[in-house]
Image 1 (cartoon, one colour):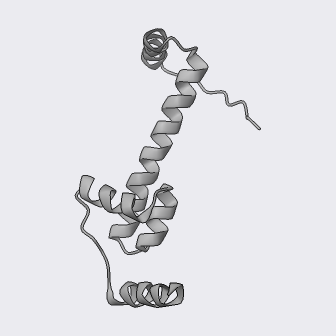
Image 2 (cartoon, rainbow, N blue to C red):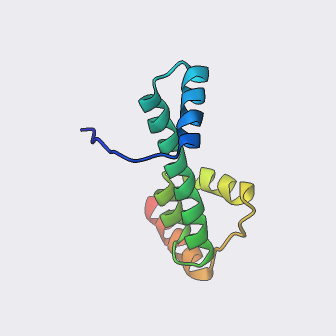
Amino acid sequence: MAATVTTRLPNELNKELDRISKAESLDKSAVMRRLLASSIQEWKVHYALDMYSKRAFSTEQAAHFMGVSLWRFGDMLKKYKTPMSYDVEEFNRDLRNIKKIR
């Protein structure tokens, strides 16, 4: 189900939306939905990486929050130059999970 959201925009943003709408051959609502979805995903990536760096999120939690696989999460760490935070506790948990799979 979709919700209707009303907001006021500065004239410059409104002009930019018109320009993008024309360039993409989309109505302004579609452009706004697309840009908002993209911005939310970008925020989720930065937030998850920040929480991961602060050790508030584990590797799995950060990947899940971003909505990506662990492999893709590793790519994101590299892309955003975020040091890997993998401690002994996480290693042991992963080892236990691997043994369960066998």
